[in-house]
Image (tube, rainbow, N blue to C red; front, side, top):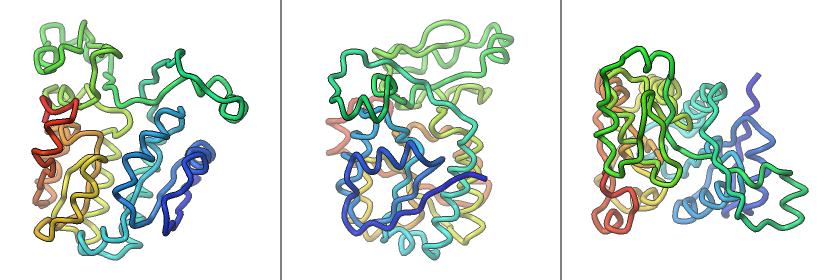
Length: 259
């Protein structure tokens, strides 16, 4: 049975406590009202080598935005976390990281590695499509090379745009795999949600400043991470889909060319 912890936190959780929970459980759902602090906490988890992709933040304003009960929202994300269990994100080394003795004792050599949203591909199937190279030209950062394509750790901004250009669906983001996103969408629709707001951690807080934005928040590493395949799946389910990425935030974002 998948071990999902649900935590109600009036204040932002201590960074090291959240990192420990992320490593001890298959998934963590944190419910609070501090969206403005969320991106900072997420970045800490990433730099600490914790499994940040297994942590979901639900703001207490989300049920009202989505038009469903809080319990239904938690259960939808529980299904999402259960589904990503078989996927392993691309991990990169960070040998130059300076860590404390405490961090080393807690995480071992794992503190020198970072979980990323770098795209992955189903190698064998992709290799069989010998003339397809659509994804290589799609990347605005020239971060993809080869057949099957591999992303450069140095160039990739983890925007996910290339995964949407892939006509076969073989290129995907392991931290937000297609099956998990579709399971989430299905559960949200079953609970009565009619609209989706696609955004990223940096723009999450801004969603709650907009009364005209209604719907369930679908937070991804970048709005470009939503593949065309899952977008069409959402439309097929009957969702109205809105993308929230304000221009003033976009100008300073390293993923802006993908957006």
